[in-house]
Length: 206
DNA sequence: AGGATGATATCC
DNA sequence: GATATCATCCTC
Image (cartoon, rainbow, N blue to C red; front, side):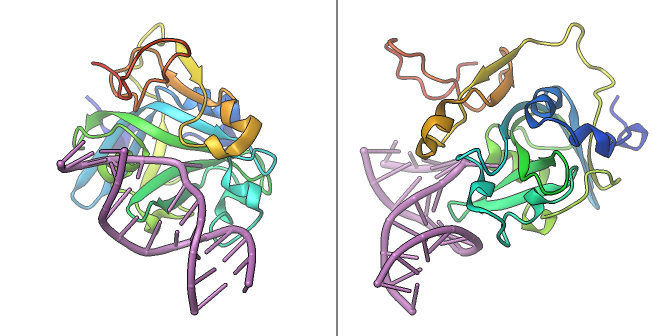
């Protein structure tokens, strides 16, 4: 039984570390959003690391702007942006104040109080109820936070690394293995096509 | 394969 | 001020 009022937010120190490490450790954790109409809880199963201004795929590679201000700020806060005019994407800010790094949440496994359409960053935000009003929100709060899964599987599933999705413009950084997901999880947003193999699948199979 | 739909960055 | 570009999703 998942009682969100018994769950404790991860401490800010969790986020104040190497972004790749935080990304990997976020897998399997629960994200909790408390709304007037109830609690929405999902298990994080797919993420991407955006390392900082030197990472040409990261929004912070353009410098400090109104949009990227939060990503350059202290760790443990939420960076939300609107993409393609219709979808929200949610990131958690990592590393010390001024670094400009974050982890994009790409897919959840529904746990409680949410619809089942949680594959992909846009659908994740819709299911969780996240929009631009959450820009800068503190994850060390009781309204929106990430926490250990009290029913975590032992041993934990293997972690798979792959290139990030939709960043082909980023030169050398486009192929960096900075996307991480739980091996075999049915809620992963897509499977990278293997080179040299005839395979027209763009979505993963159940 | 292409369209929706709006904020943002970058160029006049 | 105009325009090209999106860390996407849905429908055809």
